[in-house]
Length: 242
Image 1 (tube, helix red, strand yellow):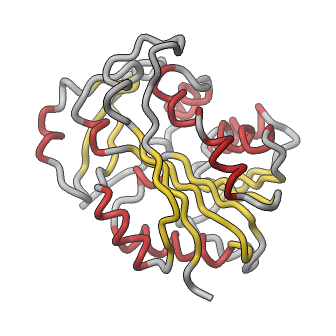
Image 2 (tube, one colour):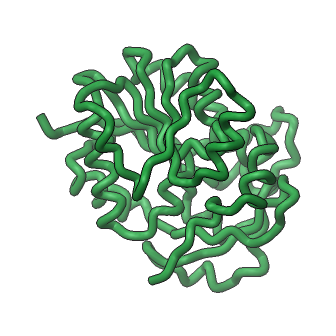
Image 3 (cartoon, helix red, strand yellow):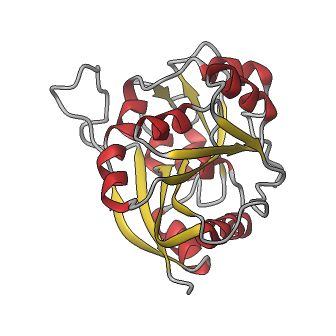
């Protein structure tokens, strides 16, 4: 299957860089500070798939010494412009071979695995995450729920893509972000909870906790389905390989 990472695109990068935490995206980040403080016992963090640096800056505000890595130079250029003091590095083919074993207390990945097309690629990257973890380290992997591709949301629309309903793990799906200027459809890879758990096991990782954030009525957003269906899944993982 041919699959192109849509974020390796200057126009998309510029549009995405202006996005912070509106609407449905707010739910992705809302609970992360509490989750991360519970499981990350040190301050050394790696932000895998940092894009324009939003999640890296987020970790830095939480007090972490963070390195952001990404495969898209257009994204990293904008990250460095917005955060000149930050540490942003280009990685080729998602390789983390330049990082030493056991050196990170937290590996965070936000939305990145939506754009990694195969089980084999996912396993290779997740094994690298495990290799990097300190003895008490944890991985926080935030991904799109399959539900996000078949419903309407405060920040997304999928009504033009009825074919999404038939998609199985590994299939391409489309969605449109409504909070950015670039309204071209985003192409992702859908991946079920069962499929993620198979991948984690194959990578030598154990699921410690799973979170599915829901919107609340007192939050300042016009929720569509967010109060009853979670658009995101947050996995907390630890290494089982000694």
